[in-house]
Structures are given as C-alpha cells and as structure tokens.
Image: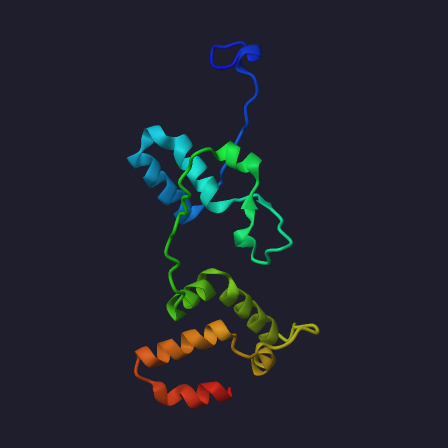
Amino acid sequence: MKYKKPYEEIGSWKRTEIQLREDKAHTFAMLFKDNPLNLGKLAFDLLAGNLRFIVPDKKQSNRSHWKTCQFWNRFLGAVEPLQLHTETPRSTLLETQRWIKEGGVLSAVKGFCFLEEHEALGGLERIEDMLRHIKYSPAVGNKMIGHLSRINREDLYHIYRTI
C-alpha cells in the first residue's frame, strides 16, 4: 500500500531529489514559504533552470543551441526555468585574516616555531625559510592592493610588488 492505494493501481512513478546547500537552500525555502502549495512546480522549475539533457548537433558548435531531449521535456512538462541567484560576497583581507586565525594556519605556524625554538625540526623547513621562497597568490595580492588603497597607503604598492 502506498498513499492508501494498492501498488498495482499506482503504476509507475519517477523519484526526483534535489540537494541545495547554504544560500541557495535558504532562497529556495523562502520561495516555498511564499508558495507552499507549489513545491512540485518550484522543484521542476529549478530542474529546468539548472539541468538539461541535449541532443548533439554536429552542425552546431554552440551547445546552448542544441535541442533538449524529448524525454526531458516530457518529464518536466510546462515549466518556467528557475535559477537561484545568490550574491557571492567578495572575500576581503579581513576574511582572510579570520581564516588564518580560525582555520588552523596560525596553530601550525606556532607548532613549527616551537619545534624550531627547541631544535626539533628534524629535517622540516624553518618558517623563515619557507616565507623567503613564497610568492603572493593573485587573490591575496588583489586583496592587499585593495586594503592598501582603503587605508590610503598606495605608497607601499611598489614595495609590495617587489617582495
């Protein structure tokens, strides 16, 4: 029995699952809250806006122009493609600092300093030597330039770029 009907009366059905995380899950929940009777429609609209099965076309190099498979169109039915747009906050130097403090980086550095102080590195590199050979990643470099600009220290640009 399923839904108070014998299985023979139900026929076939397709099970569909959607997994959303963080901001997109919250956005979808807010849409559902505003339209509680339309969960199925929201789910199918979301599928239509984010997943497409296509028929290859050798004459067309742009895949966005390829036709959608018939089985997918039949499965979705009449839908309005829905994409959940969430703003991706720009990562700042302050967030990088928080990551350094909370992500265990400083703990590891402190551990290496302890080993160095007690002459127990045993073949591991000293922090000072590692720092001498490291280059800024483009992401960190951009954050540093933004930070220097915000605090009106553009005078440090030329020094930073040579390190």
